[in-house]
Image (tube, rainbow, N blue to C red; front, side):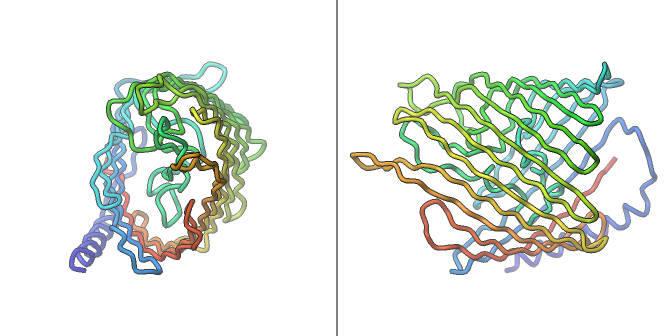
Length: 356
């Protein structure tokens, strides 16, 4: 209890400092150096009073312009999840921007996998939900066999590779070659051989506020046993968003084809979310995710059972200042193998600031 009171005091102080900074900071454009920081706290209570370790995140995205049209991006993150602290480097890349017929950006290094709606919102200040992430990106699929590592339908991975992005007024396209597949579980295993994976994606925007995108990935994901050099997969992802007035509706659908020694697996799932701005300070948000996947039994003879994961996250948010937001939310979630719906209520505190 004392720790949680200290957390609230900490965020109140940050909120006050944010007001002062907003009043004193001069307007500037064309910054050569910028740091966008996010500090977040999140806690839940479940209907059966089961313990839920509080989560904290310290996320800093730094960009440095080393010469005209060239910049370096660096994003370290300290994250406490499931009671354990993890230090991550989500991005460390060099980017070159230029115009030749359309707008181009070439990026090399470590960067977010360029596929999926959830990756565009995979930061606490960009995600309007009580949960800071889209659940499919951090939820493992059921057991597929001893030769298959932990996988997700679509995952929040930050691979190393080379990417090219181009866009015009009504369309965008991107291609990448990376060393991690977008179905590998988000937490990177140690000592696993990496193999090239290809990603192609693009979208059209017929009018302002509306976009539809299509993307795909294919290659190999590393197997945890020495008996297999690698296992093949393919993914297709469709996403879209529509913003009108003070509302925004967005969603995506994903289907995978995954090779295993016990046969091919074809998980699929979708997410649909809605956000409504009630006033300059208040907003509400709701996100529904449904995943379907087969599960291989761990007994002999083996059997395959169809499983379903479902979640509904509802959030009410209030912006005390431009940088400090309080969110309260409710979650109804049914995991893969438990028939009972888990009811959860939580609170989230988040502070953001641009330092330079």
